[in-house]
Amino acid sequence: MVRSAFFIVAVIACGCYKPTILLTFVFGLLPTFFCLLMLKSELLALCVGIFNLCGVLPFIIKAIGAENIPLEHIFFYLFTFENLLIMYVPAGVGFVFAKFVSKLIVKVIVKHYEKKRDDLKKELLKLVETWGEDIKK
Image 1 (cartoon, rainbow, N blue to C red):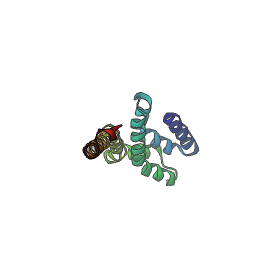
Image 2: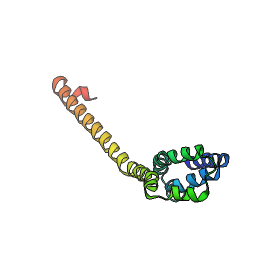
Image 3: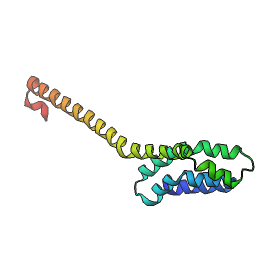
């Protein structure tokens, strides 16, 4: 579902604008395309894609506003070290978020409900002491 929706949006967005936007879109979202095509986890692809799009969006907006930029300038603009960092580091953050932060959140929630279960067991023991064994039924 996520893969088909992403590719539909990508084709429509790239088809409507100039080749400079297409190049920015394709080279900027390489980590997202890799996750969509090679990895099986949709959560991972979604997190990497959203974070990666946040890093690429300023360059796409700048390419939309620019008029008649030669392709040599676009390649120079896209492949400077700082711009590659701005585009690809958010994809790495999305990968870390999907792999580790989601597991950490699940562990915190499980601990919370285990504590709640233990508190309910203690309450039940107090009630059994007060009212007798018949209250358990």
